[in-house]
Length: 284
Ligand code: PMP
Image (cartoon, rainbow, N blue to C red; front, side, top):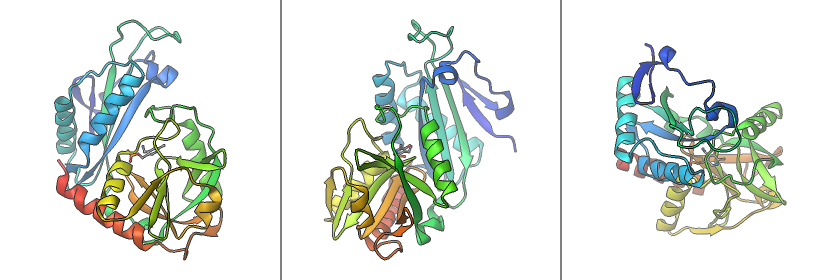
């Protein structure tokens, strides 16, 4: 079956969808994106993603070509047209096409593209039972990581470094402190306390992070939002990551050293369960 994608107001077969070679997303990475998970044919935390999308656009003075209601409708139509039970919807908005110039063009028409990816069984991912291995690498990204831009080359390089080292992902480190994973937020657990870096320009404000911290506090867990070091991570009882596509995923090894028992921890497993239960209930 040919996938149906959405481009600038039209639903098209993927091989007929086109974007200009002058698009600033292509030339300058002048674009933002969101990834929303689909479970049971429904969208997980759509409202959170729509809100962060608007924030990213505002930070870049980029126009939003759709209302939140229209965006929801497009997401639902793509999920329906492509028969997605489990997977994700990818959304990208760029500043649009213009003659190449570093300065933003005057009144550009934004480009909007959405497509789906089917990914059966994300909630039953076997990594949730075995846990992930990470390596630590220097964080060499730009300074506005709170804006969800399509400028993802360093995270790609990080994933390749992890792969070359026989690991699943890399945690990035700046001034001795972990910022986040290449495509996820990073956490450690010591006793009953969950530690994750505070919000700022150094990390992406994860939508899954917000939900998981809310559920953790509701479950009377202690949450500390502060930077933590690589040494702290290696001495932690548990570690985990969160993202819209991985949900809550245990991390059991860093730089070849086991974290805690070297197996997924109790706090992580509980948070994953609560997150999946609550988000499935609230899915649209
Ligand atoms: N940090 C980075 C750098 C990411 O790329 C992502 C996923 N896009 C996240 C954190 C997690 O964010 P979310 O929970 O909204 O998927």
